[in-house]
Amino acid sequence: MKNDMIKILFVCHGNICRSPMAEFVLKDTVRRHGLEDVYEISSAATSYEEIGNSVYPPARKKLAEHGIGCAGHHARRMTKADYGRYDLVVCMDRANVRNVRAITGGDPDGKIVLLLDFTDRKGQEVADPWYTGNFDEAWDDIAEGCAGLFESTRGADRGN
Image (cartoon, rainbow, N blue to C red; front, side, top):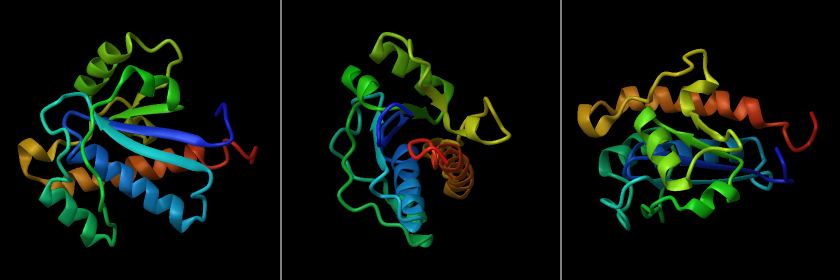
């Protein structure tokens, strides 16, 4: 990565389910490894629909089941400036990728990716519990994707 911090932005449609779940899962992983000073992690939406709302209660409950809190999160929309600020813009599905590219005007630096590209399920999408109600499936996808993302970035700025 290009700076001394690894900056990751997770993106989904509303920023109340999948992207904040991924944000807090990765923050928890980073904390458990004592690398809070190495990572900057956030999340955002591609839409305006949920701006200002907290994490959706079933998503909050799923995080809590795994001992992960998400207090203080309020949905926000991604901006064009975010593209320059973050090293990776990690999307949950292909519609998010299209919408992020529309917001940013493209992907000249190749930093817009799918979360599951960090697993052996490249090109697949994180299940959307907003439509299915299946937060277990979303959790499994997010946990697997975040584990792969962490492993692929953990030594990036320290040269190990």
